Length: 299
Image (cartoon, rainbow, N blue to C red; front, top):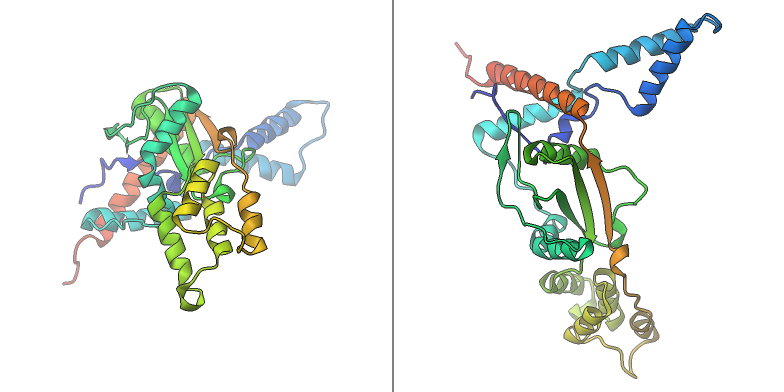
C-alpha cells in the first residue's frame, strides 16, 4: 500500500502532535531570556545548567521529530488502513452526540442568534481531510452529564485543538470554536438507563427516589423533568418517601448560559507549517513500516 500521499483525519491528527517538537510560550520566553543574558556584557555568564537548557530548547525549536507515542499510533494506523478494519468506537457518550447532533446545532443557533449549517461534506487538502459539524466555524460536543462539561478555565484538549486547526485549513477560516453543550438525555436513552438500573434491585423494582435521582441527573429543564417523572411513574404523592419528595421539590433547572462552554482556536500559520512537517514525517514512517512488514519476506 502506498502511504506517500496519505491524508490525515482531522479528528485524530492530534495524536501525532504530542511531543513532536515546537515550543510552548513559556519555553520561547526562556530562550529569549537566556539568549539576552548571554549577549549582555553586564550579565554573568550562563551556568552549565542554563547552557544545557538553552541548547535543548533551540534543538527542540529547530528540529521536528515524531514522538514515541506518535510512532505507536502510526503503526496501528497502517494496519487499520491497509486491511480496512478501522475499529468503530462505540460508547454511550458518542451515541448521545450522534443522536443529538441536530438539537446541538439548534441550541447553538439560538445561543448565537445565527442560522448554522449542518455540514455533510468531507473536504481534502494535500495532507489533511475532515468533515466538520458546522461549516461556519463551530464543532459541537455533547457532554454526557453536568460533571463532564469542560472546565471553562482549562485549555482546550489538544486533540480538539488540532482538529479545529485542520478545519480552518480546509474551510479557509481564521478561527474555529469547539462548543461543548449540555443537552437532555433522549427519552430512549433514559428508558435504557432506568431499565439497566432495575437489575440492581430485588424483583427489578426500582424505588421511586432512585428513578427521580436518574432523571434529575440527566434532565436539565423543569418541563421535561416533570414530564418524565410522569412517564416513569415517579411523581411523588402523599405516600412517597421523604427522599423522593426532596429530589422532586428541589429540582434546579440549569439555564442555557450554564450549559455551554466554548473554546476558540485562532489560526496560526507557523503552527500549520509544523503540522505539515509532522504529516510529511508521518507519511515517511508509515511507508517505512509498510515496506518493512507489508509483504511476506519468507524465502
